[in-house]
Image 1: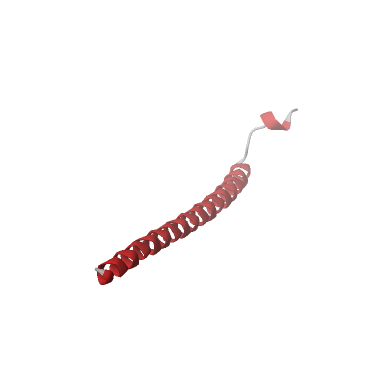
Image 2: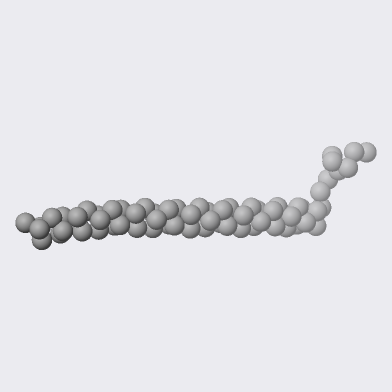
Length: 71
């Protein structure tokens, strides 16, 4: 008789549920790790962009300050 068609016992079901829970928890941890990595990457890119913008504004302010002192 094919074992796949054999009736499952409560123990068989408990083992199957435990395996599914383990796999689900592994997948959740993997997803959490990937999301955290993406968040850190995005935060770093935003910080870099803000720094570049501030440096550009500072350069413009310096140039205007020099022009104002000459006038």
